[in-house]
Length: 301
Image (cartoon, rainbow, N blue to C red; front, side):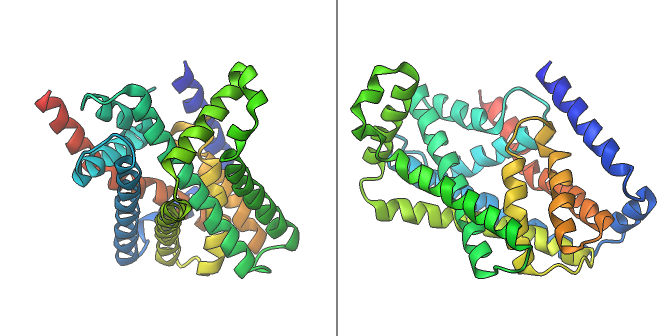
């Protein structure tokens, strides 16, 4: 039922968007996009995935997991494959957790490792957006820029505050809030060295930088005329919105957010929609190695 709702949401958004653009023009833009820049974009996305796997590997080494780096690469690609291609209730994070439990690791430890990787990745995205919005202030309307800076800053401060929740002992009395207290304890144990935390956040910033470069290369492939600084400010909020699990693999949400944000700088709606669709297709292609790793793992078991 959940997947049917997501499917209907995706179709509804695309139906609305296609009423606002010329479909024939969109199709022509897709087939005439510069293949060289599309290939560079694919390369950038693959680098982003590999760096994300490396971040997860680094975090896992601080915990009980002692697998080699290639294990995390294979698992990350498998997770991407499930996220992008299979309308299943098993998401990419669940696949990564299952991969660890198949190695006889504790399920709770596996969940914590993947959860920390996800949170650190999110903080990296917010940090990149914050830095870009400050450095290139004025690229967008002042109110929009201040909104991005405010949301990013408050979210990062919220993450920092999480490390101090264990000091508020009265929270332990409440079952739900006690979860955050225990999480704070685990995070403080994991990141006794804040320099190590900064290192992992920096890796996350670079991960998302390559994702933005992927989108920028697609903009070049379509001759969209958008600067890199514009992409650095506009793309991270789109990535944040696609986290909301109300459509299939972010389809529709991503396209609507792209058009809405890039309209603020006067970008052509049809080209923006084409760029977003092309990015979605590229994500599918970049996730294909995960299908090989998944099939291979099923054969082994």
